Image (cartoon, rainbow, N blue to C red; front, side, top):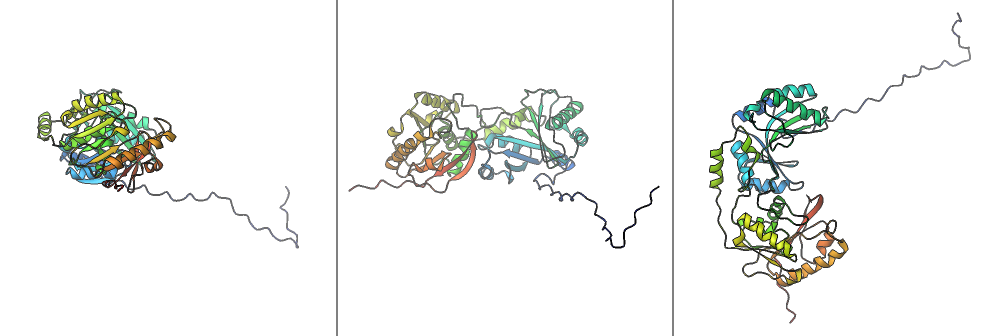
Length: 423
């Protein structure tokens, strides 16, 4: 056996080399606080049993502050601005009233459970403990939709399956992918929030618009844009490119105090908590009154005018609306007090060549400047350059917000000044 080598007298001893180690990982950032994070599953169950829980009003991206203002104006309790919408507090009557009365909400979710969860087995256990019989009926089909973000549970399909299985095993309700009743599961930063979509179809489907043209404006967005303009139903409204009449009809309904959900059904009517008698009483107490004002729509397309008239008739506002075929050059201000001109012109990215639109916007601005003194003007478009082509005294634009997959802004003027005399 060879003996270890001895260092020579003139040799410098080697220093021991440090053992290579991996750098310590950075400390994990704490999960951002959410409005529902402070509510445990047990607390949520107790609050629902007491008749109060959190209700989430879904807003189109960018419109959360406008929806908050609407919720406040309608007297809903404790409205709070959150990402994607507004939360309020209440019970099932508040859920019904939100669906019936709110014009800007896309959907209304009843939050029935919120708890931390770190793996599927834990999700399965907590889901089995929820009192599904308080919410769902055994004879009504349901479906589950789940989303996962920044969580240890990352498979949304597996999460949805666990919730679905828990409902079937504890309640026995049937599952159907086409069911109107949908359970929404959101797992974000290891917090699971379970909600019931109480609206069903999106709330922009008022039940009146059967005929639409290209690139239609949703009723919920039209209502939010009108609110951004400060519109409260006390002035006439004119849309010079009315399409299927959405802005005109929505403004007329606001002035007539017609509940936007008066003509449709909702998913909450299939829940175990639904009280048909109380719901009918609530619908009857929503008052309406036809105003002395009129609301005007113009379009160069004769087919659009036919659609608008039919939609206004179904909405019950035909007697206070007027639609006529006219190009931009043929626009004139109606008699009576000035009001609001609101228009959603083509943007060029979907409905034509953008370069050709500058002339259109310029002609629109010229007509409004020369014939609509005293009227305010609101133009919705994707491009500030197009709005500038109107040569109108716009203030700082609002937005941008999402509309049809595009980012649009609202350009609004004060009342237009009279045309200066040439003499």
